[in-house]
Image 1 (cartoon, helix red, strand yellow):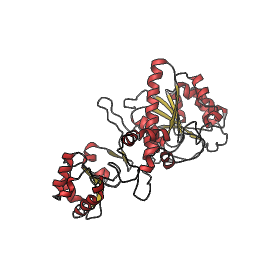
Image 2: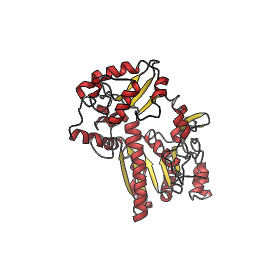
Image 3: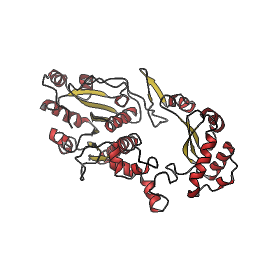
Image 4: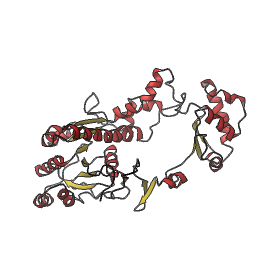
Amino acid sequence: MRQGPLTGLKVVEFAGIGPGPFCGMLLSDLGADVVRIDRKGGGRGGAPTDITSRGRRSVALDLKQPEAIEACLKLMERADAILEGFRPGVMERLGLGPDVALKRNPKLVFGRMTGWGQTGPYANAAGHDMNYIAITGALHAIGTDDKPVPPLNLVGDFGGGALYLAFGLLAGVIQARETGKGQVIDCAMSDGAASLMAMFYGFKASGMWQETRRSNLLDGGAHFYDTYQCADGKWISIGSIEPQFYALLLEKTGIADPAFARQMDRSAWPQLREKLAAKIAGKTQAQWCEIMDGTDVCFAPVLDLGEAPKHPHNAARQTFVEIAGVVQPAPAPRFSATPGAIQGPPPAIGAHNSEALLDWGFSKGEVDALNGASAPAAAPVS
């Protein structure tokens, strides 16, 4: 039995990589019934470490066969939404484009995830997260004095992509339920990353933002908003922006140097950072935790992936769970009346060809015909 605020929502996911599976995970974690269409013969799947595939059911189809295309269209007829992450035009060439799908189901919300979007000069070019955020100003703003540094693939793939697609799909479903009309969601990671930069474009327009990295309030330029290495080689984070928090930082570190009164003087930041770094280097991470944990300094230790699940705050909130020996994030956000849950393990490819199709209203004869097809597997769609 599925649980969560999206229980009853039916979603078809065409298997992909990166932000597509993460979007499917988010929807599933909150209770949506997500059926993933996998390539027949595409591999085993089902590894417990494939965290972003958790909670779905897998139907393996050969999308070069007309019977498989018809099965996909029948699933779309019964779905509230679909999500796909192919390059522009691939779904149309398969016979599964939005024009065909919306004729079969006028209330369908058709979510399209790409790096560059469905239109524009880059639309058909390959790319990865770093490229998508490069044209938004985000990558230029993140990094060291010497060079921009990719912030994992959090800003483009997951922040600008998966989260915006999930948001768009749910907004589209609400609209469809009100009006009876579905629509296409063109979710470009470059658009989402640009949206995430809204506050910083405001800073730039107001004269508060300089284009040089590590010269601004939130990019490590300020000595009171940065990371510092401790005596044991570990790191801590300090974010004492407000005057009262900054005063507490000076108190907790034992700093009485009058130069620190120039908190918002940009010209003083490099010198003050050196002095604060020397002070922080005098104690271990654990010692600073003992001094600053739970205070209004705006402090936290910088933890690696092995340490983070064991932190007392994360442990108390059960932010991480362990399933089949794999530590992974629990569903988020949290709902008071209809909590989400990990609905199941990552599925083996094709594990639910019968179960899922029968649940979605296919007849036993239709399921047997699809399962008994002996056509060769399709080549990967790109």
